[in-house]
Length: 382
Image (cartoon, rainbow, N blue to C red):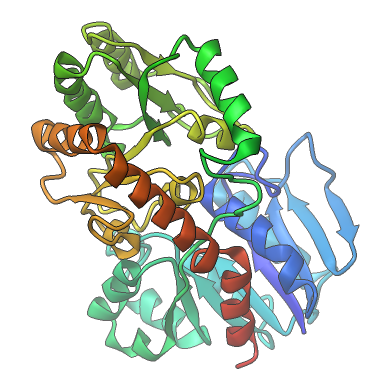
C-alpha cells in the first residue's frame, strides 16, 4: 500500500530536537517501508532537506509557524502533488486533523495514532470527536490508560482501539554493566565530578507537571542520610532549547541547599541521551500529571536501571512491582519518594536484579520490531 504518516507540528523527523512521537516514527519507518511505500509529512527544519527519498521512504517537510499553517500546507499537498495518492493516511495525535484532511483525501482510509488524552472536552467537542471516530478504521494508542479514556467517553470507539506500547532500541541503549559502557560511564562521571557516588537520574523536561520539584525535595532528605549520592537532571524546559523560566530558576536555587551535587545538563539530543542514562544507578520518573505512559520508562529499562515511577496515567502499565522497579502511589509526597530511593540504595542486589529484569523486558517485550509488527497487522485490515 501507499501510506502517508502525518506527524505533529512541533518537531521534525528525524528527531534531531527530540520528541517522543518523532522518536517513535523514526524508529518504525525502516520496518514499515519493507512492506509499504511510506510518505512522511513532518515539520520543516533548516538542517533537513524539504524533500528527501530513501528507498520506500519519502520525506515531505512542511513549513508552518502555527499548527493551522502546518496542517493547511499538508492539505494543499494532498490536493495537488499527492491527489488520490494514498490508500491509508495515519494521523498522529491530532483527531481534528482527521476531519480537516478527509476533504482533501476522501477516497483514502484514515487511522489515528494516539499518544495523549486528545479526546477530552477542551481539545475536541463531542460532535467532531464522534465524526473522527467514525472516519478512522483503527486507533493505536500508547497505553491502555489512553484507550480507556476514549472509550469511557465514546463507547463506539471500543472496537477501534489497539494498545501498542512503545519501545527502545536495545542496541543504541546498552545496559550499565555492558563492557562497552563501563569506560564511558567512568569517563562521564569523572567529567561531572561524580566519582564514587550513587547517581539518581532524571531524564525529561523540567516542568511542574513532570514533578522535578518533588524529586529535588526527596533528594534533600536522601542526601542527609546518604551523602555519597548525586542527582542528575537531563533536560530543559522544552525540546531543542535551553531557556529557563521561574520554575527552573527555583529548582536551581533550591538545589544549592542540598548536601550533595545536583547536575543540570540542559537540553541534549536523543543521540547524546544514552550515555547519560549510563551514568545513573537509579532512574526516577516523578510525573504529577496523568502521564499517557512516559517513554523514559523504556529507555531506563534499556539502560538496565531500576525504576521508581509515580502511579499516574499509564506509567504503571509497564511496571511489575519489585520486578523491574517500584511504583509510587503517593506521587506528590517527597518523603515517600525518598523512602523508595533509600530502599534501592541500601539494597543493591535488589536494585541490580530489577535493572536486569528491566533490560530483559526491553529486549523481549519493548522493542521496535514488535511495535512495527503490530502496526503492520493493523494495516492489513485496510
